[in-house]
Image (cartoon, rainbow, N blue to C red; front, side, top):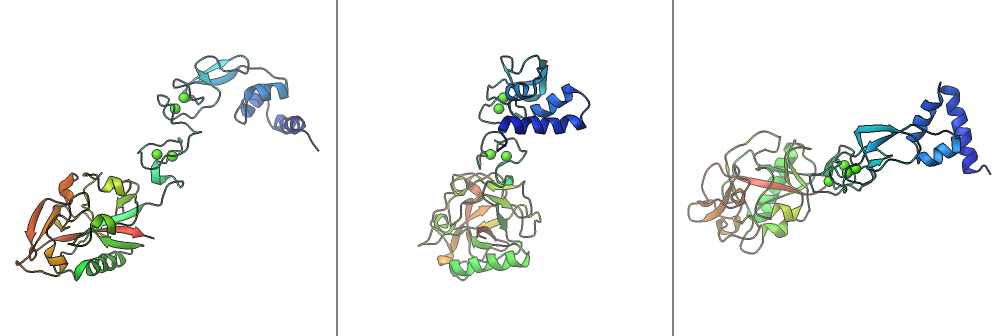
Length: 281
Ligand SMILES: [Ca+2]
Ligand SMILES: [Ca+2]
Ligand SMILES: [Ca+2]
Ligand SMILES: [Ca+2]
């Protein structure tokens, strides 16, 4: 069997046939492994290129390189480059992408759910058509969200962000996100996950409809606080569309807790919408 050293020398021999100078061979091989191993294998020594490594994570900043003799990096420099944040040792091409921290941890230019290692993003929208408080109960409201999503060719299962006397919206949101406004990915993130959704503020107001259209400044049935629990009024469990009942409503201009609980309104109020959250594929 061919030894690793023999394999290296054969590879270098093939490379040298296509490259003019020894220096360019060395620079080519520098991109393929430890420079000391390569210089020993090919009997060639520097100068080599090293990158400033301010945060000492062994990955340097490509924009701050020097030539240095020998195969070992000078103090404060690294052989590897590609560090997209040389002030944060947790961020470099050898790190794992952490989902939901708004950082490109592994320096591949893909942040969080843009990176295939993170969960597939889900969709949230506010309905373009208004409804009164007689929604046919929670199941009727969920069916409305599903129908509206289907008319806009949005894939997946949707539920309305609603609570009633016996059910909290927090329990009905059975997925963990992340959620983006319809048609806006990778922009328009509303929440990284369920805990982020229900922590009292959202990343962006839910002011986009099922087709990605802008729907600013509407109020929305919720019956809920921003933590997703029943807030005390819900149009008689979403069976009453008259002035005889009231509900807590959110206002979709807000990203603080008023996105879910801004005021209370009579259940025959015109122009009120639903927030619809994807909860399944
Ligand atoms: Ca670094
Ligand atoms: Ca770094
Ligand atoms: Ca990340
Ligand atoms: Ca990434």
